[in-house]
Length: 380
Image (cartoon, rainbow, N blue to C red; front, side, top):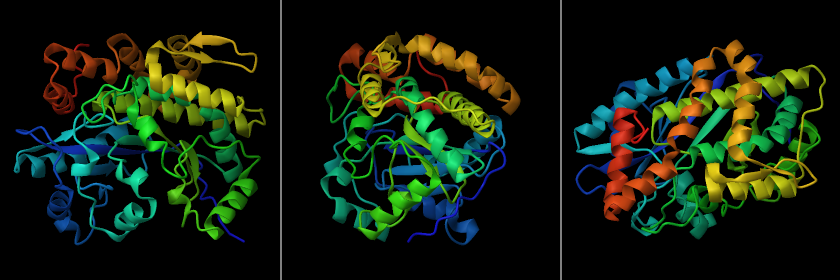
């Protein structure tokens, strides 16, 4: 039987992982440059860079934080590494691209990173893995126990559509408007262990589930359990994985405040012995679809009777509900800035507006490069 300990986090610490594309400034296409960039910036460490990592494709790079106390700390941590990466990119005429997908590049034209993990990944999973040219954001928030992590994941799944709608920034796929606001969500769903988190009774059932999957050869470790929300025993966190990479750092940080405040609030309520709210799996699945399809125009099912509310009203309710937690965590300003996303429009709207001008996907890529460089959502 699997023996798995949960590394308790006594505080609601925050970690953020940001996946970004590497684009040639002239051609506006993705380019396989991550190994070259990482070799250069890692030289002073005598090994791997601690906060800049390979991704599945060499045209992607992942920037991660350390363990941060506040959202502001996480932003400063990310910005420091991104500045280092940007210097190396600028020398080569390259730039970082936000957003959940490159709008026109085909996965067939990309190069898998030449590391055993990724080569095995491509070989064993095949087509679903090879299509995963997408970029997301992962938020880790510290929790006190495995049982708390499972209960929080059960409940936080209710709010998952809000993250999908607010972060939606992948309306285009292979030079085609899919009609979705988050095509990345549907692309990544094809992975074998990607799904909504199942409703589990507690830590013991989570360990039993992992034991079966590992013994049965479905995965080698918890790292290959790609649920939208999952307990992360090694970090002592609940990890929220459903969010598109966004066009600007200010949007990433706004949703970091929602993630930290939400997990902190649910953790406090669990510690007080409260029963955390949940919804049936069929409701969670339907709401995830509606958010990925319609974004902030969606109406979500809010109970087992089938009653619905506009997602923008649910966002407002969450911002009000989480305000005390955000004040306690020092991220009140960042939480309130979520209202800017609602008012100004998420990335999917900005990308569609950029394309509509000339019906040229190069305009969409240029928008993504400009927004990331300036940290200003165009049109707000």
